[in-house]
Structures are given as structure tokens and as C-alpha cells.
Length: 371
Image (cartoon, rainbow, N blue to C red):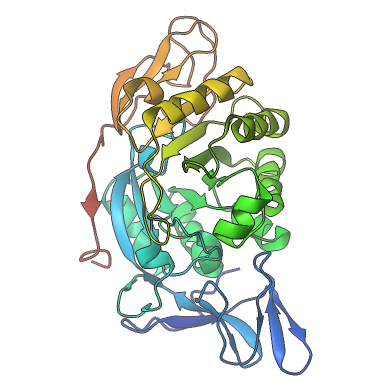
């Protein structure tokens, strides 16, 4: 489905385009069926995500063609450690989110109600062309969840693939099965934010549910060719107990297998959760130890300087395959097709010859994305 031709692009004005995932509920309401929230709306009302609204008895996306920012990042920042290491990725997002996390680290854009004033205009083809112009082999839909700008995200992905550019989704995985399948047919890699492993956490701190996210993870692993990595932000006293980490990593091993990389990231106080201390480094180390003990082979730390926690090691001989210092590649001991130089064991992932050299750079593109 390509919607970019249906609504003329008008710089400075959020564009509304028709959507398909909704149903009528009586004379006065429509129910959005994009995500498990199933927002029930009257004419003129918006869903919790804010960017999907009831208009003329239908659900429309009001933010098509508008982003809250464009930037060339290292792919490791997504974080993706086994997908085109060292390369630059053109990153963008929009306003809105379909979860309401009290600890949101991007709340300025995800919870914003000033969509027009904080948005830059760009068509799908302009985004793909900018990625090509800046030597980015991939484009990432990130900062907020691409679920909420489903139609825009699909058109961007199609425009990228027409130019041989791969696509990345950074997401919480909170989406219904039909739109999920349509979206991930266009995606090459995803990092799913598994926020915790209890219904209590999802219900009280995110206004969502755990089961829907686990279903997305199983779907991605079992029914798609999407390269998958998982991130969990560890919040002291909320989702960092030994028991929860043990249950979560056992579930991952049983349902996703041992080779899906897992990133444990450090929390810092933000948005509506400012009473919690930062995650101690020893908590990240403990979490990694539990995950490795439960059979996961590739476990990493994030948001802290921890060179050991950023390395990729061979499961065959233990040699260091990829060394990292934050987002900088410091060592590379893989063949062009992703095998250990020392013993020949395969390293799961998407590799393309030698690693890129983008490193820790960050290049904002807001002022020139449409040139």
C-alpha cells in the first residue's frame, strides 16, 4: 500500500492520509485497530498516540510526511550490533507514541502535542535520497515508534528498497497482527524494546501489556527474515531483580533461541520518573551474567562506558570478534561473510565485508533533508 500520492505534500502543515486498520462501532464511534490499545473515538478525537484521529467517520494519520528530526547516527546507537557494524544510518521519527511510559527517554517528541511547530517536512523519496547522498546503507525509523506512523513508515521503506537501502525499525513491538505483518514485510532489521517481564510493569508504567510484545517477538523470529535484537532498560527497583531477569532470559532462550542479541541499558531519571537513581554498573554486569548463564550467546551493556560489555565474542573459541568503545569499532576479526577468523565459527548477523568507519559521529540533517 502506497499512500504518498493520495495527499499533496504541503510544507508546514501536517498531512492527513487515510488508514485501513479501524472498524465502525455504532453511529458515533470508530475503533482504531492498529495496536492493542483499540482506541474508541468520536469525530474529531485523537487516540492516545495523538497522531491518529477520527475524521469523517474514519481513522486518519495526521503526521504523514513530517518528522521531528533527521540525523545520521552510528548503527550501533539503535542499538544494533550484528547488523552492518560500523556503518552510518539515517535516523528519523515523528511525534506521538502508542505507549505512555513514565520513564520515556524521548518524551519531548513522543508526548508532544505541538506536531506542526516541531516537525520538518520530508517525503519518503526525499528521505531515501538523503540516505543515499550521505552514504547510509540503511534508514532507521526511531526516536518514537514507527507503529504510530504506519503508512508513512511503509512508504519510506518502499522508497528505500527501490534504491537498495535497507530499513530498520526501533520499536516497542506494541502492534496488532495484521498491520504488523504488512509493516515487517518491508523491514530488514529491528530492535524491540522489551521493557520488562511483568504485566504489572507494563500496566502501571507503560499503559500497555506484556503479552502483545512477546507475541511480536515470537512473530519476528519465527515468521520473518527480519534481523532481530532486543533491548531492556534496567530501572532500579522496577525490573532489575534476579528473578525477573532469570525468567525473561529463560523465555528468550526458549522462544527466540540463543543467538538473538540482548542489550541491557542503563536508566537515567527522565520525564515522570525522576525519583529513581541511575542504574549501577554492577546491575548491568549481573544482568549479563544471568542472561549468559541461561544460554544467551550475545549480551551487551548500553548507556555506560563498558568496553567488555560491548564486545562480541566467538561462541566457538572465545576470541574477540568485534571490539567496541561506545559506538567505535576497535577490533574486527570476522571474515567478509561473518565467520571467526580464528576457528571459522559463524557469527549470526548481517555483515557486508569490512566494517564501516562511521564511529561515534552524529550528523544532524534537519536543515538540508529536502535538498
